[in-house]
Amino acid sequence: MEMSQPSLLPEVLDALSDPVILVDGRKVVTFGNRAALSTWPSLVKGAPLSFTLRAPDVIDAIERVLAGIAPVIRGTMTERLPVERLFDFQAVNLLSASAASPRTAPAIVLVFRDLTEARRLEAMRVDFVANASHELRTPLASLLGFIETLQGPARNDPQAQSRFLGIMREQGRRMARLIDDLLSLSRVEMSEHKRPVDAVDFGLVIRQVTDTFRPVAEERRVAINLDLPTESILVVGERDELLRVAENLIENAIKYGHAGQRIELALTRERASVGRCDEAHFTVRDFGPGIASEHLPRLTERFYRVDASASRETGGTGLGLAIVKHIVNRHRGRLTIESEVGAGSLFHIFLPLFSSES
Ligand code: ADP
View (cartoon, rainbow, N blue to C red):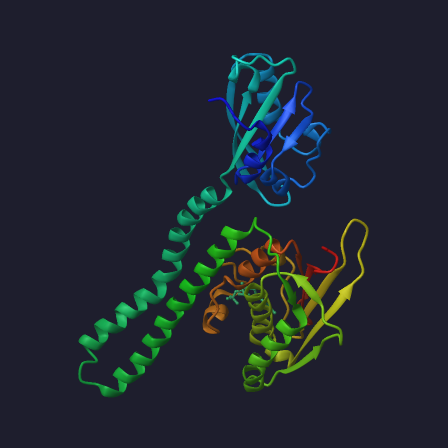
């Protein structure tokens, strides 16, 4: 088909949601559409493609297309940093595609398709089934056991019945909590490669969560010491997710650290170290039993608990810190944990500030 208005071509390419990049015979970028520039902000016209894409398979495909081995080569490309992403791509030699209007300079068009979400979804489904069924089996078995008891030996024992029904309600709630946590974990995992864009007042989020936990803390005789700066600290974030981060850490501090009788929450603005933008630094400190160092690296794995029965007793699902880690990753922040057995634990969250973005 003959293009009647060739000048519209860049606009047409910009309208595509898939990244499209043009390179010349030296593999220097001559064009990148809007989707390509937003996927790889370091893409520069006039610079070698390899400056931006460290993808040997893509470079190899271009070379083979240039050499005339095939007019079109398809492949897949994995990026590991800052988050793992998977693309399939095709490299097409424009010279041979438009043989009718021969060109003098070689040109290769690269068209990418982001498969990250599809792959993640697939892996998550497999994971979800395995983890969820394992974790749900225990309360379910207990529910079924009590139902049988209620139908049999406890049929005429109103006292036992009411006690068992109480336990059954607790098991049912536990299953519901597990499902909620698994679902929110899969939601953040799915969107992890898409960075949030809103400005969120992190101090406000922390204050709000602290207020909701005051009654629980009082009940457990834990004092909450909240130290917020007077200025507001805006981070790039999604409010609901940041609420979950604060909730999980504060809840854990009260739950596991209640013996220390107080927890300390603080938010500060941290000056940038080299190569980083200014950050918000949120700390949650408790003075409870602490966590032995061998557990620290694994704490954010799903279903990892230092003491499974203690976690279950307090209604834990073993997913809280996994959710926190994924949310923080999505926000391009960091989570670090310090702890000393007998002295307590200190959780740090660092998040990029909104102002340093713009
Ligand atoms: P859970 O639902 O079990 O609380 P989390 O993912 O929130 O799951 O935490 C994982 C494990 O880390 C907990 O089971 C507990 O053993 C340990 N943990 C978390 N926070 C603390 C803390 N503040 N003090 C001691 N141990 C903690």
